[in-house]
Image (cartoon, rainbow, N blue to C red; front, side, top):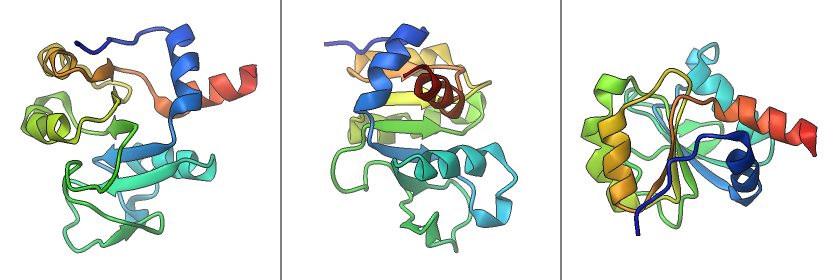
Amino acid sequence: MPGSLIRDHIAFDRLLPRLRRIAVLGIKPESRADRPAHIVPAYLHRAGYEIVPVPVYYPDVAEILGRRVYRTVAEIPGRVDVVDVFRKPDDLLPHLDDLIAARPRLVWMQTGIRHDDFAARLLAAGIDVVQDECLMVEHRRWRSSR
């Protein structure tokens, strides 16, 4: 069964309460705490989500936000609800096989990240997709509307 392309606040509002475990592909370590790829997962961690760091660079970093670092999403033990993606659109396709192998419920591409072919392949694999939206902004909006 193909995944769904999720585009509106009503759908986000249905999703957010069901998400607990978030792998962050492209997360930045504490040494780069001023970058969105650290600010957003740090916010989500403070909001009570389990963050699983998957940095692309920083090979010497073993922990981010007090959590063990994994080098691919597929090597994370257990189910991942969502993969929050902080990668440039041109850098997404090399991660496709890893994401399909991991089978998260949802791949969420942050603000400014859109790649229709990448999204179509995830959808065909049965993975829901959000493109070009900030998970932190949507969480704040959802939380304030409850």
